[in-house]
Length: 203
Image: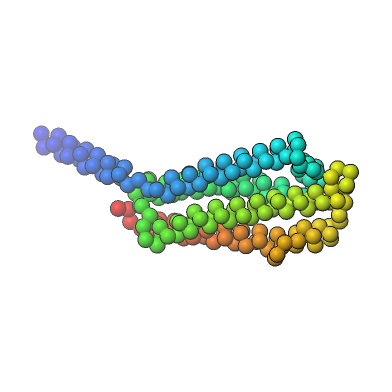
């Protein structure tokens, strides 16, 4: 009889513990999932812009820029990097926050919460700024190097670097580097917050 009561009591304690852990629902995984949805929507819109442009208003077509390579490679690298880091990377990051908050039962608070905000904002702003500037500058530069017969200008590499890549204040490479720096700072803040939460005791 005593053993039976002891087992029932143990089961109740376990159930209460499980229920208590289920109450601890972190918000950061949800925030990063929402950010991934937004990035995905932007990726679709961005892709449609280039595809529709290919079919009508864009001369030279972006497919020629990609096929030509050279400075147009910036476009390809920027587009693929946005899909990998901006969409997939942000979505995968949500899993880390889910593990800390919902599996380990450690909701973000204080310094760690501030670091998570920096992670969310700087990572998303940084990846959009860097990759989209790479796409724009890559297309403009690659298009300028194509022959006039297909809508290009027939420029050489020197002309492209002077008139396209450094044709805006500070130049595209500088702005791209600054946005990559923001992205790196955001990821570093997220990593530091993750370490702080990992070392913290579960509530």
